[in-house]
Image (cartoon, rainbow, N blue to C red; front, side):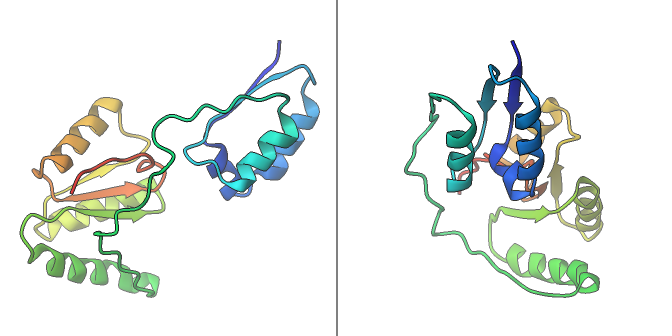
Length: 168
C-alpha cells in the first residue's frame, strides 16, 4: 500500500506548494491512502481534499467556534528593515511600562528569532525564544516560563507558534 501524508496542508498551500502536491499526487499509485493534517480548514484545503481524496473522513479536534481574543492590542508598523530593531526596542519600552505584560514577537526565520532574542536580552528585558530547532523539553520550559510570567517576552517563528495557547 502507498501512503501520502500531508502535514500542515494549509501552510503548504499558503507557501505555494500546490503544484508540487499535484505533481506528487499524479505520480503515485491511485490506490494510495492519503492523510491530510491541517490546523485550519480553509476553502483551499477543502478543495484539495475533495479533489484528491475518495470518501474522506474529516475529524475535528477542539472547538469549531474559536475566535481571536478581541482584548489583545495588535500594532502594525510598516518600516524599512534597518528601522526594525530600533522600533522594536522602543515599542518594548512602551509596553514594559505597563505591569505584568506578556508580549509575543513573531519573526520569519529561526536565525532571526535567536538574533532578536539576544538583542532584547542585551537591552535589559527578559526574553525567551521558540522555534523548530528547539527540543521538546526546551519548548516546554520556554512556554511554561512565558505562561507563568517568569519571562515576559516570547520570540517565535510563526510555524513554532501554531496552536500556541497562552492565557491573558
